[in-house]
Image 1 (cartoon, rainbow, N blue to C red):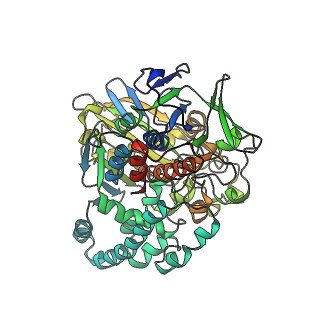
Image 2 (cartoon, rainbow, N blue to C red):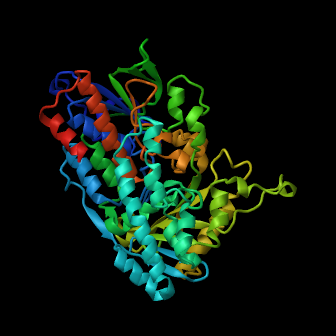
Image 3 (cartoon, rainbow, N blue to C red):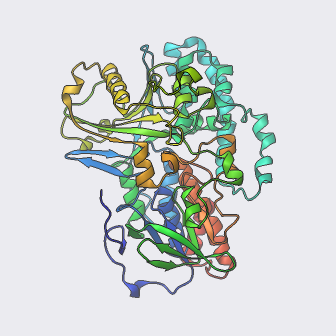
Length: 538
């Protein structure tokens, strides 16, 4: 999609009337109209700030975009919504009717299938999951139950931590005793393997960090709290897809599309004072909220792009290939959310996340070798929303994790070979030997597209890896500790990636920023601002 000319307008295309503006109090520029940027902008605007969102693309949503080809439509970013109450809270805190967006339950949340024929539906509710386990792995039920008991307090801790800023490394160290008490610091895979023996169930109960760019063999077990989160919350599909969530968040906001932030201007004191755009535009402001790639902000501040200090410990996440397929017929046996594991999970994840242990042997260097048998995620929303494809058709988005561009030289792969693995897996899942004859539309999105379209360092797909040194204090702080007036939100900021993560981060960032503006006398506590602040504290 091409970029439109820079112009100040609302997401609906209507130019706001200058006479309708409230008297100037606090001016905030949000850089990036991703889900986190839109959510924080809504909260700040409702609190009484004068908010302008600048977006380098020609539409809102960032990675949560939409692609169309003929009668086919695909969400290009996140597709699984959990914690729908957080979406409603975000809308309400921004002065939007929380019922403006319909949400459809998806149950089972997803289906996991292995190449050897094993299959598990992952439903909402702990007892429902244990019943599914008992059907195929009755000897594992007690172990899975014990594991869920271990993960429950880690889930509660995740929610608590997500609402807490990490101003000091001591904030992180203070959590260590609690994490240790609940085995939250050991690798997630190790905790799962301690209670579950079957490799299929180990995959099913440990893979969840892959949804936010994490390696389940290395991330701390606290991220296993994503399992009870999904069991409690269930899976949800917004009417019209995640793209309709983007539109609902963007509609009340003033957004400048085709506007790339070239520089964050600072006063002699070091505090933020304006944002300069490519082409010479300049927007004066009291604060900036950065919703772009966490590494690109260094360039906007005039620093070298290389990572320094504590950020060296946090690595950019893996990337992914996204295949968009339009089939002229509906594929049988495919769930709304479907995961395929083509072989042993560990070799593939080690390859995709470019672990040191996955380096090629010296004798094999200089030769490209194929990836291990792939694991992939398939989004097939026509089961819930037939409008995504022509009548009787199917619109599939398939995500395959791959190494980011910083590791691609050591971990070569062929897009064509991965495509063949994807289509072969879809044939296995659907049972259609003539599947390729029904394929009408096909597009692919690569790590180079992540780099060029989203300015993502090394073509990362999920910002930072959620390792121990990529979490909490080691991620971008919601309130920048070095630059007064600079704040962060989105996948690269605390608490992290995923729709719940960026919405929780937006709530935290808005709370910190409004408190700072009030302290500076730029924002009052009355009216809509007070209501928004109270919503942000809940």
